Amino acid sequence: MATLSLSQLFINLMSDGSYVAAGHTNPKRSNELTGSTHTYGTGRRRGLSSLGDIGQVSFTLNLVSASDVTKLDGWRGQAVQMRNYVGERWVGIYWKLDNIVPQKGSPGFYMVDIMMDTITWPSSV
Image (cartoon, rainbow, N blue to C red; front, side, top):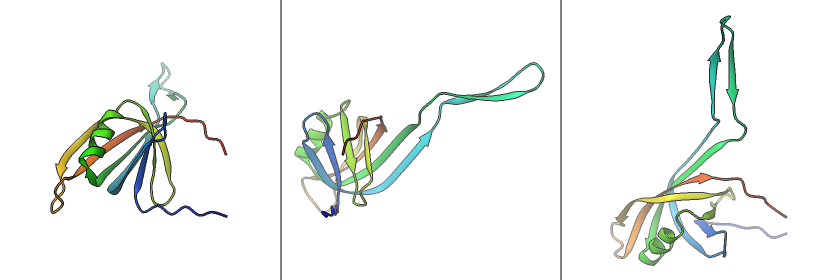
């Protein structure tokens, strides 16, 4: 049996499998449903929601090279897969890279914030 051990966050472009790997901090994840509560004439209240979760995943990538920042910038709006060091997997689309700042003490490397909207993607084994 093979065991996969990742020390970094891997971001794969789903269309061709190319990837960027970087250390990461500040992992955040949120899930929500779209819905509302309606009050009817007799005072009765009902909750209405639409099917499916709305999820977001965000990370701060560390020690990202300038060429990888350019690569990530080119992948905006396309389906990507993210996998972290504990084997969690998310598939989604991100629309912008935020807070691209030089990494202190490491010339030519950057810290990049990325927030991805998760999407439904079929998995096969």
